[in-house]
Length: 265
Image (tube, rainbow, N blue to C red):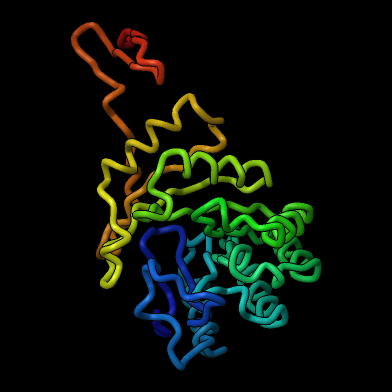
């Protein structure tokens, strides 16, 4: 990682930070101390060094291009990056991290969608509340999905913003309605200056338990804790509905009914 623009927590995927700029600086952002500085866009040299690093590491199959917000780069600059990465045999998946669907939906147009389709780029976005799903955001979503772009949402659980089971359910149902996949519900990271956004993990587990049986499976994200020190994501699943003893397993359904399952012989 000679350029310092790569984050790698897993053996088969990594992040390239291509810009320090965002259309909106979110107060809960895990990179809030690192973005918005004077070095707005990553230099061409640093990006090329990052791409060379990927070329020399054949275990990497997926690259997330982010920042900042990667879609603040011009289409021309994006295509240069996509073209170089797609020319690496072992890179199979390109992904963009962006909040522009919510914060700058006018950035999403047919020209950009055609470019993303050309290189089979997936989109990871972040809607944290149903009120962010504006008519303009829906138009941006439609533009991407109508061009065959996969759009997944990575919501952050935030105190006094969306830490309510009905709010989370409504937001994810709205996203599903507009063909966005509710992918992750992130537990908020304990970043300096974000204490007022923190919630206890029990709250997130309560929300996930509520979603069971009350909404479509396609509206249920995976609740995850993003471990400090680069240790990666840990899925958080309510486990009180699973018991086992010498006779086998007992499951508790969302209606508090008991289902039994024998051990395999």
